[in-house]
Image 1 (cartoon, one colour):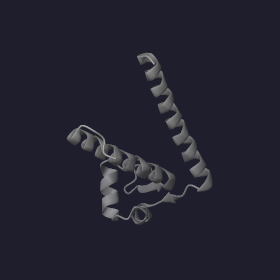
Image 2 (cartoon, rainbow, N blue to C red):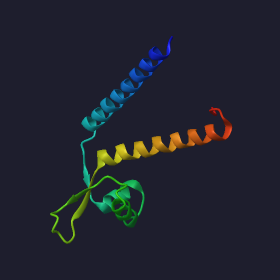
Image 3 (tube, rainbow, N blue to C red):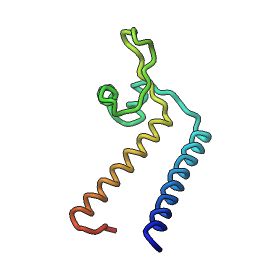
Image 4 (cartoon, rainbow, N blue to C red):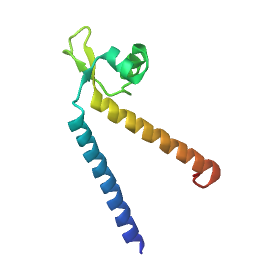
Amino acid sequence: MNTIDKLFNELVEQAAAAAEKRVLEQLENMITPDKVLDVKETAEYLGVSPKLIYQLCAEKFLPHIQAGGSNSNRPRILFRQATLDRWLREQEEASIQKEVNTAYAATGKFRR
């Protein structure tokens, strides 16, 4: 197999994996109705403090929605549970990839 064939196969595999991920997310959303959570509920759902939730939102690290106009003194911060679930999966995948890269950099090979 030449380089172009290998590259093509790799692109097809990546596209298939991305499509599979989207389909699974859509199925999950169909099974589990999307719920809107406030800061306190989100903190309980993630097992952290409300203070940390506010901090992660201020740093634009945690996906959220600010309900209320731009002139509002205290807009409500809301979260879609499905978005939080997706964010958690992405964080987990990034963490695993980081561990694999670290192990590879340290040893020059993948550990099993």
